[in-house]
Length: 329
Image (cartoon, rainbow, N blue to C red; front, side):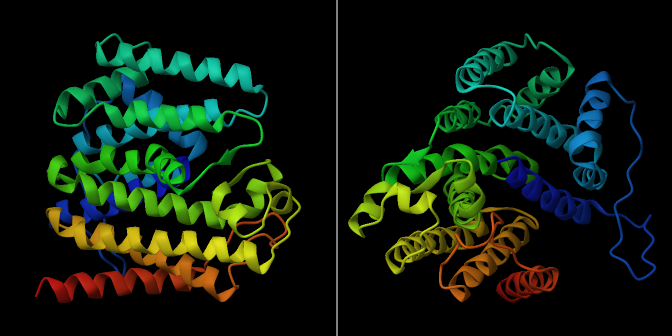
C-alpha cells in the first residue's frame, strides 16, 4: 500500500506543482519546478520530514513542488499511511502482536477525530481532516480493516468479490484520501477514484505473485483457482500451469475494466486532475501488456515482481498527455 501512496502522491505533487507554477522558474532544458515562499516550520512538519527523509526521500523532494498548505496535507496523509504500513509489515512481530497494534492504531485514529492527537504527526492529520470536512472518515477505517485482513498466516482470498473489497480497502481508500488535494468534488469523483485504486491493487497483486508466494500469500481468488483445478499448494510451489495462467488472465481482464472506468471518470476532476489519472492508467496498462507478453506466467521470476523499464514508463506518460490534450481540444 505504501508504494501505491508514494506513486500517487508523487504524481499529484508534480501535477499540482505544475499547475501552481509562476514566472519565478528556471527551465534550462528541464521541466520547471514551482517556487513557493517558505513558511514557518512547525513541529508537525519537522516530524514528518524526518520520516520521509528516512524512508522516501524522493517523495520528500516531490512534496517541495506543492504550495505550503497542500504539502502539509499530503505529508500528513503520507505519515499516517506510512506508519500503518510499518505496523503491518513489521518482520520482528508475530501475528497476534500486529493485530493488537492495528487495533490500537484504530483507537488512535478515533482520538485524532476527537482532536486528541498522541503526537505531532497525528496532530498534522487532525488539522488535515479539519481543513477538508467533506472528506469521509470511512476510508481511514477501511484501510485499517484491509491491513487487519492481511495480518494472518497463509493469506488467501475466497472469491473475486472479496478480492475487490480488499483492493478497495488498501488502495481505493488512497484515491479517496487524495481527492481533496486535487480540489475535486469528493461525491462526483468517488467512483472513479475507487476504480483507479482497485485497478492498481489488482495489477500489483499480479505483479507481486512471485514475492508473495515467498511470504505464503496467495491473493488470486480460491474459487477461480479451484474451478481450474489449481490448488493453493500448486501456487506456493510455483506451478505455473496453463490453468493457473488462465486465472491470472481473468483477473487482468477485470483490472483493465476498472482502468477504463477510471479513465472515463477522470472528467469529474478539475484542473489537470484528468492528466494525473491518465498517467496512472497508461502506466498500469503497460504492466498488463507485460503480463500478456510473458503469457501471464508471473510465478517464474525468481522471487521478483513483474516490471516495465524506464522507456516504457516514459512512453506511457507521453501517451497519457496526448490523450488528455486531444480530448480537451
